[in-house]
Image 1 (cartoon, rainbow, N blue to C red):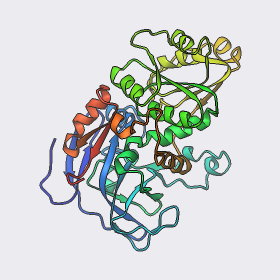
Image 2: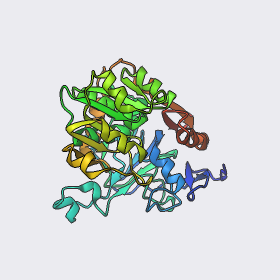
Image 3: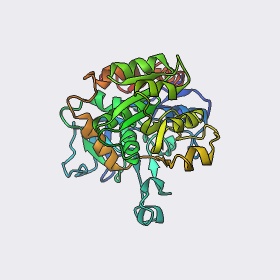
Amino acid sequence: MVVTNNSGPLAAVLTGPGEPITLHNFAKPNVKRGEVLLHTMYSEVCGTDVHIQQGKLAGVPYPIIPGHFAVGTVEETGGDVQSVSGRPIIRGDIVTFLDVHATCHRCWQCQVNKAPTKCPSRKVYGVSHSSNEGLLGGWSEMILLQNDVAITHLPENVSPLRFIAGGCAMPTAVHAVERGKVGLGDIVVVQGAGPVGLCTGIVAYHSGARVLIADKSTVRLEAAHTLGFEVLDLSTSDNAQSLLEYATQGQRADVVIEATGSPSAIQSGISLVRDAGRYVVVGHYSDAGSTTINPHLDINKKHLEILGTWGVEYIHFHKAIGLLARKELTPSGIKIEDAMTTIYPLHEVNKALSDVRERRVVKAVICANSGD
């Protein structure tokens, strides 16, 4: 890892697919009117960051500063700036922000299709900004929030570590559970016990569902069990349907939510859904390849509803923070920050990325400043 000798804030830079992360000093940003400069506390490493490092996500303007979710303290504001709720943002406040911005609210996708996550103008911190534009990613000691970024204060009962333990996975989970119309008394199977899968389980649990989480990773299944979920251990049997029917006395799921990113999970997941049920795909944010399903047997005859989930809007972000504020967040009462997170200093970001890629940890958190 190369570190330059300048005195400005350090940031982790990915120069291209397959390249290691290197640390570089950047000039401290000149904060313009309406902007906010954050002193970063925590950011996260998620599956999307692994895909970006592997070159599997289209349209990434390398070199970039990765890290699309982060939380920090306000260092400076460009004049009077307010949060989404209208509260003034001042130096020292602990705030976070929605990574998605620059949505135009004027195009066909925004105005007619009502799908702002598909707006062609949409930008994402840590994903679609080059590092040549400045400190616009979370793996950095400082982050510049441009004047169109939606900013919110953390509630007093949501610590910065709890927020980042949920990270981008929690609003993604909110969106997926809404897409699946999960309701009281539903049986929900979540495929995958990574951060998105575990957060999906939490959201479904708070929607009144009975939740079972399927995976074959010992580390991830242990986290699911610690959080209080029933698990379908695919390391002992790859027949998820038999495991489910044994656990539910022969019933199949009302809703199955895929959070693996593996094409092979799709066919298995569809087999777990009851007739006239719903199957939600949320884990395929990059192209991992194709799978084969039978349109007659898997869709028509089952009267199955299949839904994709792409990105989040501010409402999902808002609901996620509200959920994180609940005292009893998980079925077991165990805190997600205790069960899910492993913390790395900024200079160990390559190790954090490797550990996520190899599934040695559930959730890697980057502590961007040694004083945090």
